[in-house]
Length: 435
Ligand SMILES: C[S@@+](CC[C@H](N)C(=O)[O-])C[C@H]1O[C@@H](n2cnc3c(N)ncnc32)[C@H](O)[C@@H]1O
Image (tube, rainbow, N blue to C red; front, side, top):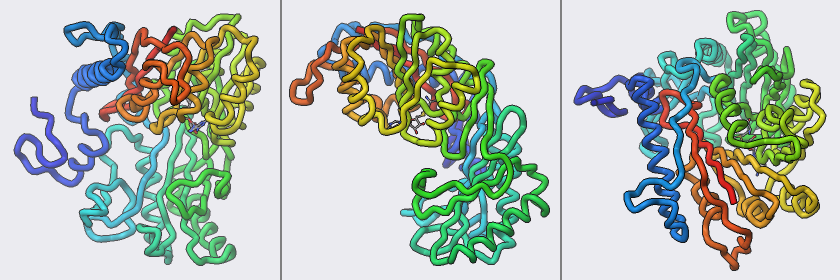
């Protein structure tokens, strides 16, 4: 079946809008059943590749290239369209050459052919996000300040992030390059932004909060450059599996709420959590995984890099009346090895790791592998074919004296893909490792 591509749809030239759709949501022309089948096959291939890498464990793949552990059918997303609760709109030259166009790029800087296209037709983005993106474009077009397209070329207005929740609340975060403006000069533009969204045409967006971040880098944490609340509620809240979660501007939260519930239920079933057990929730964000499993466990210890997320996680445990969770702030590669060194008496340790695309630092892997009390490890990855593959090899491969990976190797037992991102090629892979 011909599903088309960013260049052509079965021989027909495609419009710029279609090119964007093929870039952001390459599977959009397939039925959802076809998408799931495609993802299932992809995940299977990735796992075969992983098993092939673990050369010592030739027992993992049979002679027919079949896996020695089951891959369960992909868990579908309960919501297929408009599922994103967070979208970031960029600024660049539109088709008409207007540099104040808010949307998504196609083309490359190298190819000097970047065009910014409105994302109104994208299937994964809810209409509220599109409305805020369009309104922001309207606002910057009335502003005397230039957009910041390339950091070294000057300009100020940068992208906008929109966050919504299932209760219908909306948070917007405007990123701004200060260049050489004084704080007083910046204040004037902040005021006009507030005026636009609180009293002007932007009221149509009904923002519950508007944040502003002065940033000179692609991504700054709250610690690097504070998120300034221009008006409204400081946080957005979401409910997952009957629990309430506070989410700060700087904190990660799974982009698809309904699929996150499916992911956490899957992880809960696979974790074999019990009342004697302690769970290490590594890269815990706002604490969602640990908190949702806490009633089945003796104790949860979460570790997270972003300070606002750690504050959220502590708040969220208290908000839900949960007392057996502790959350530690810092890089997992620093916090975890020190912590495990003091936890000899904890015998029933389970680790759930859910790093970003960069995977886990080698020091985290070494600490997990060399701790004999961790018998079960659940690795959740949104990009298992990337850096996570290196981690799988370090966790399940041969003893490596040079790299001090001396603990008994883990063995993959079961894998479950969960579709968090309909219309895109991505999904979450939950891989259970045991020893
Ligand atoms: C994919 S998110 C998972 C969050 C959480 N498990 C959830 O389901 O909401 C990855 C998290 O890892 C955090 N992170 C990234 N690098 C880290 C590091 N070196 N140490 C600890 N946390 C890190 C990010 O800030 C982010 O919150």
